[in-house]
Length: 366
Image 1 (cartoon, helix red, strand yellow):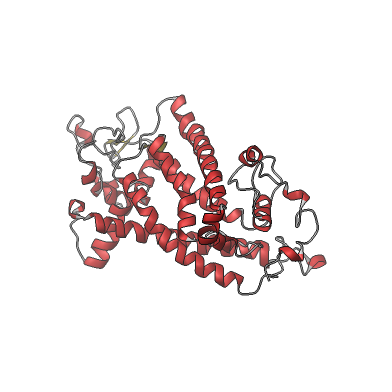
Image 2 (cartoon, rainbow, N blue to C red):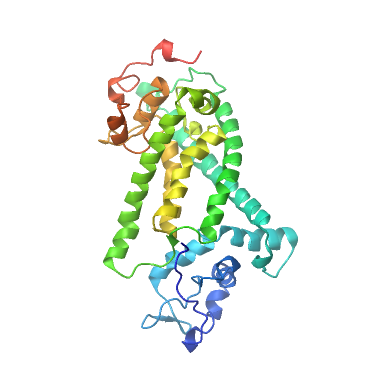
């Protein structure tokens, strides 16, 4: 079912809100939002506008229009493309900078154009994440030394025993996979933009609504994705799928932050599906959804950097390192509950390298 959107604020019921504030809409960000207030693909259901006139009085006026501070996340979210990415990129990049077109006519965009724009956007966004956070994590934990007394050691206890070309190979594979996975993921995000998911834009008006937005939906998201990823990951270790699909990610037993996206494209896409399927099944605010996806990317980098915190029941970097060294253990994504239930849990602090001993030579890639 399509989500329910509040009425368009361009009606004449409130003269002060018959049009957006000139002051607000003259601003670069909000001006673009006024032009995007009702995309054609939501013509059958009124679209939540990003104009200042969203909520009725008695809120403090801004140039004659009511404005509520709590609407800022929605306005910023729309501007950054949380639910209108392809329209935003089409208007400000493709039309204006590439085609030299000033008039915004999203109804004329073909599905192929929307798909291509979304594909490029997801590719660029993910590459920026990858080449910003992975090098930073690598410098902090792999390059930076612990101190003068341990000049030869780093926080990750990484000694390049698997070859100096590891980082270069991981980067090459990651760039290739990100490009392909972005194309495979784009249809999900286009369905989000076209209103076919249970993502909603309204801010809650009750304590229960706020609890669901801030606590309920994130907890459900984590529980759902943790369950699905565990079984998908375990399935990928089946002999019929491991060699052709998942083995590429296990090329190196000593992972680095650059390993985070070094997947076969099908492997990465399969393990990413639960995050997108969730919003087809359960309501989630669009900003919460965006934050959740960003957090997934950060967590993926974190569990490959080998530096861990001993948090009870959390499947951290130590657990995932053991997964890479011993293969058939610790398939979980966030927690260890499914590994305990499925008999695949291995306490990393009882095994190398987290018990203070080096990884056995037999477990090193030659």
